[in-house]
Amino acid sequence: MSNVKRCFANFSPFDQSTIETKLEEMAAKGWMIQKLGNLFWTYERMEPQKLHFAVTYFPDASEFDPKPSEGQLTREEFCAQDGWHLAVRWGAMQIFYTSQENPVPIDTDVVTQVETICRTMKKTMVSNQLVSLAFSIFYLAFQLWDLWHDPVDYLSSSNKLMSLPMWILLLILEAYELWSCLRWCRRAKKAAQDGVFLPVRIRQRLSWFVLAVAALFLLLSMGESAFSASAVAFGVVMTFIGMAVGNGLSRWLKEQGASRRVNMVVSSLGVLVVVILCFAGMIALMIGNRFPFFPGSTPVSTYEWNGRTYDIYDDPLPLELEDLVEVDAQWSKKAELQESVLLAYGEYTQRPLYSEEVDYQIRYDITDVKVPALYPFIKKSLVNARQDQVQGDFVFVDHFEPTDPVPWGAQEAYQLLGNDGLMDTYLICWETRIVEIKFYWTPTAEQIARAADILHS
Image (cartoon, rainbow, N blue to C red; front, side, top):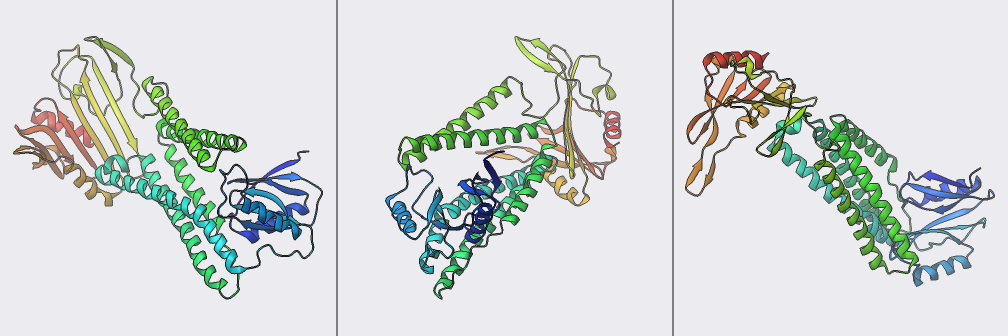
């Protein structure tokens, strides 16, 4: 039978009454609190007792302190005189217990009690929430920027699409918890002036529910490819290693008597080193192609040409050069596909090996819009993806011009215009499919009709 029990801490560290009731119930069952943590609290077996607990705060204390300050020790001495014994410290939180039936309260002045809790909140919870909120806003803004500048890639990627609601939920959660803390401080200070203590009530279960939904979106994003799962697994491993190294360094430095500042700096540097090493390992794996960090097709073989090694792909393509021209050569056929509930997108290329003396090659992108309401937005983004560039007095012409859609059997068609005139690159718009195709030769009317028939089917 184990003498140690770890329980999930599903309450806010500032919810004093809930914590005190929980600890009293555990003591009655024969378990005394031994260690506190962000997710789990550790209890040690003892004889069942009827005990009273009191949760107090010391705002100037920190988890990085090598030992309790003189102020903490003085307070603990005063508490001991009233029959309160220290059970455990955790940063700014101290938990006391007593076996007295009607103990003298530790906090007797409501105004001071509220001020102490508010100061502790601002130094710990509020400051952490502000940092997390700023990071979430930055990342969400980056996601929206990516969506606006390349909606086809974004909306066809389950990984990106599912991460958007995840970050929105995290942003809402952090904003809610920050608002709850500040709102409690404002209301509690007002109530304290009338001699009433307003208990902290943060809906921790709601927070865990929102986190669970956000985690669900994260899991859904992992289903797209080996890249998604690998990226998430890498992030999880890096986080746990960083936390283990940071906590280990912090505990060791406390044992050595290092100051709070030294402890914070060295522990932070330790985490930074872990992050750098993890990213270096990831880059090494990518260079060696030993881990699927990036999605894509797999080469079937390689070949040498002019002292360099090139991959050969043999992916199935909807439209192949053999469908348009009579040519015999060795080809590399590559298809890059991604799909979400909104869009399906594929990039297809067929080119001869560099050793072949063939002028024909082809490249095309196929976008299938599954939600009709998105079609105008997607079409506009693809048409406007090409823009003229002005450098000094010279204009690099590069945009699509409307052209006759009849040869393509399409609703709309566009042809790319460059400085040398119209090019053999077309953007074709059917009912739910948009194709951008580049011919590396000038196609005949028959070849255009044949390509349209295959690509539209």
